[in-house]
Image (cartoon, rainbow, N blue to C red; front, side, top):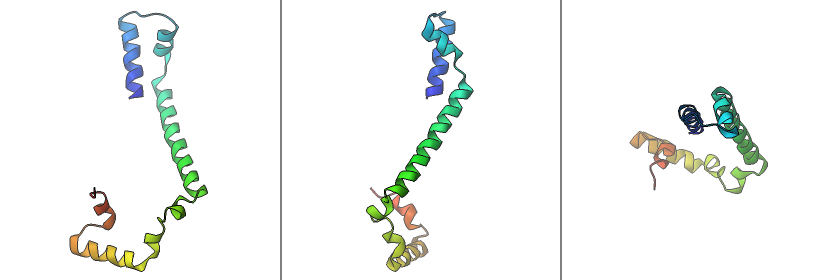
Length: 96
């Protein structure tokens, strides 16, 4: 959305012969550099999320590790897959 907005603003600036420092700056933006910046933001966000997950013990704090440790959960998961053909994780996506 950001790249499209920048491209549209640059096109409007050229076609309508708009001048000034803002329009000169918009027309001079490199879309490739902007794309790399956006990818860098995604990577940085992912890295911070992983670090926060591990540093603050989110899995332990909210009990997300218990499902993997309980034998009943594994048995229930294999039974549900055998009878319905749908994995428990896939069925969670459809719950409201």
